[in-house]
Length: 184
Image (tube, rainbow, N blue to C red; front, side, top):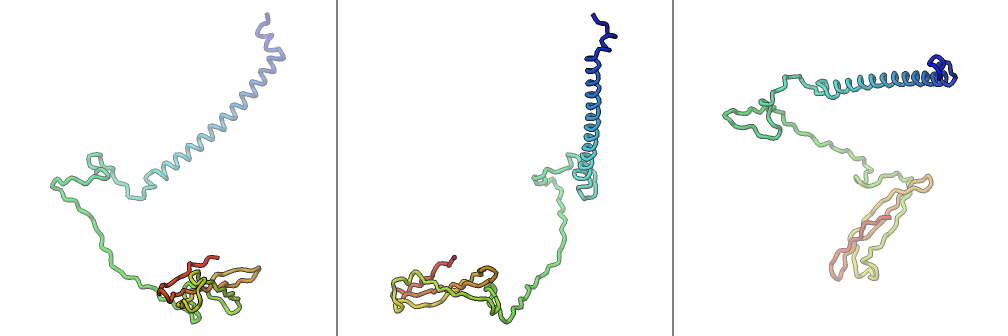
């Protein structure tokens, strides 16, 4: 049998000892980097506990914490044991606000209407009222014409499509027929 002195000189044992030494060094470096990371994370945690959850985050003058006997429950009304509860109030001056006055230009078409210069083309499209289909013009009277403008683009030119829809009153019954909103 081999003695321990002879085994330490054996090539396989020397190889295994080198591998173990390298693994130990790698483990030691990994352990050191993990410990540094843990210390860094612990310092971050302390900072968060101090600044986010600590007294600094509360933004108030620190006072002594009341004992549980002195502190009232959150949603309970205080018991009336002869003591009166004083509620502090502050008076605020009443004030009124003035509504701003809109100055509309002379060429105003209304608040919701589209306003364009004369260079913009307007394409008028008459839309028939479905109630007048099959009736002669003598059987109804046009009371109003509803106009709906829609901004459109053709290549690099903008133009307006203006849909005109008549609101009619049937002469036989006196019923007013209004078309549904045009959506194209």
